[in-house]
Image (cartoon, helix red, strand yellow):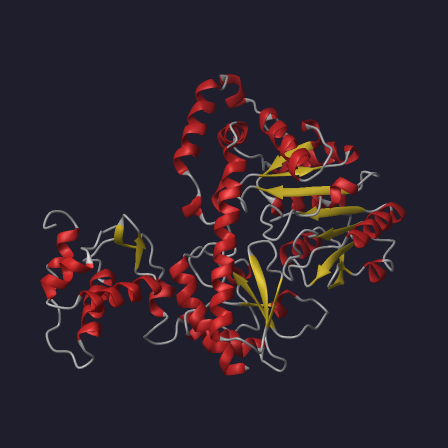
Length: 484
């Protein structure tokens, strides 16, 4: 035990006579050593029995200390593997318990900065609504990439298909047929860097200055911005409990397109009902308009199988279907795709080539191999289970410590849910007070254009550890008790 990193913890001096007691002294000694990096990330701590003998404390006292460190995110405890210092202890997470309010708390929420509009981050409660890179099997990915590159012809490395690697498009088509109910072929697909590029290509290729583009309200702010940049007259259509309001959409038969998130509406999390889907498709046919289907997180459905994609019901070829591996695998992959109507294929390809936005061939080769050997579907199953467990852990924490005064919706699927605050709560003030506790929240009001909704915030949970969820969940529950 005296050899290696574990010996470091044995040599840490225990403060001899703290007024707080021996338990607090042991906790402070270990926590300060972690923050000062005297106990580096990955260090395995001695057993509670060994440390108890060294520090002349009871084993029960040290068990309580270790549990507290685990709950606060400093260490992880795995049966058979011991207790180790966490690889990542986010600064916001560390600062949440003490010290002055973070600089974030002093930023005016009424005028969000550019970074806060898309400020999803791993390990930051509660804007961690993205794929957790810690779950991604890097070894399996590197093996797939190595095999693909070893077999790739040299011509492919210098002259890739502008629509995307044919092998990758075939794998995506197979996936869409099997898991999203969409009848499609590889030639119907264009590989992009993600959904944002898909929408940008549509805006550049389909929209003419003055055209009307309908978006959800509240909705994806980037889509609105891209359509406005293309010269569109953007119309905000309210979202109800069944999805985009088809009766209000009916007033805009002169629109060029409508952009929707049917599977798990962004940000409200509602699912577009079957009747609304059929009405939306009928509207597009009568209006001679296009529908952009943003299917950003449909892979993560926790209660039952998701409804087939809107594109699966599209018999008139009016839907432009957009998907992304950045939400399912890891954000830095930068590979997405769009399934496009035949009449739009050439204009979209021309825009893609003209803007020089093609995806690198190595990423496409690796992803094609990763999907071909079944790794992609296996990973989705594992990630779905992990995210469901994290969702359940957070919801249980809130239910135990703040049992009333608020509501939750959109938790059946996706990477986030919506926390509806008590009537009369000031969204801005709630988020400011949360920021002073190290919690970064995005108010639903910041996603609204014209509609006014009751106060609510988005809660991203997928890229947080169990310890972070417990620790941050307790702080969120305390804030909820204050406003209930």
